[in-house]
Image (cartoon, rainbow over all chains, first blue to last red; front, side):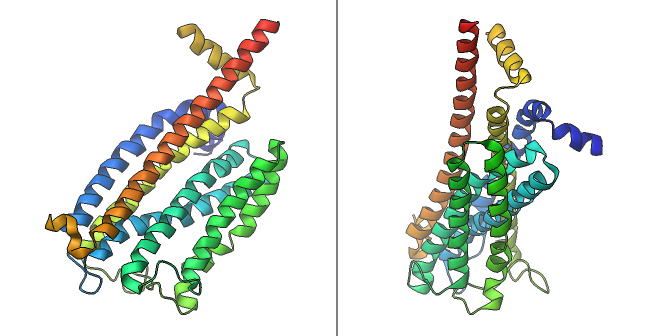
Length: 250
Length: 53
C-alpha cells in the first residue's frame, strides 16, 4: 500500500498512470449522471410544497457538496505539501482550485435560481449559508490570484498553502450555518439524525447525481493535475525524453 | 410539453440543468486546452534548445 502511494506521488509515474484511470471515472460518472438526470427530472415524484422546482436539487446539491469537498482536498493537499514537501500535493491543490471555484459558482447560481420561485428573491445578503458560500468563492479566487501573482513556484506553493489552510475555517461554517443561525436555506436533508428526510424516489436520483458528479470530478481533477505536473516538471529530463520519444513516434 | 413545463417552473429547472452541463463542458474543455498549451510550450522550448546546441 505504502509502496503504491509512494509510487503514485512520483510525478513521472503519476503522469503516465493518470490517463489510464480517467476513463474508468469519466465513463461511469457520465452514465450515472445521465441516469440521475432522467430519474430526477421525470421519475422522481413532485414535492408537495416546492412542486417541480425542487428538481433543481439534482444539480444544486452535487455542486454544493463538490464545492466543499474540493476545498477539503485543496486544503489537505496544500497542508501535506507544506509539511512533507511532496511535490504532487501542491500540484493537486493548484489543480483543484479552479474546479472548486466552478462548482461553487454553480452552487451559488442554481441556489439563486431556486431562491427566486421559493423565497421570492434571487439573493438574500443576511442569509448565513448564501453569504458563507459566496465567501468560499472569493477564497478560491484569492487562492488562484495569489498563485498567479508569484512567479516562483515554491514560494507560490507555500503562500497559497497557508491561505488554503486558513480558508478551511469556512468549510464547517458553511456546513453548520443552517443549524447555528436562522436561515432562509432549508436545514440538513441528507445527513441528519434518523436518516435522510426524503422519499426514496427522490433520494436515489440525488445520490446517483452526487456519485456521478464525484466520479466526473475525479476524472477532471486527474487531468488537471497531470497538466500541472507537466508544467512543474517542464525542465526535467523525463519530460524532455518523453516529448522527444513522442516526436520520434510521429 | 407538460414534462418540459415542469408545472410552470420549467425555466428555473432547465436553466439549472443547462448550467450544470455547461460547467462540466467548460471544465473538460479547460483541462484539454491547458494540457495542450503546456505540452506545446515544452515542445517549442526543447526545439529551441536543440537548435541552439
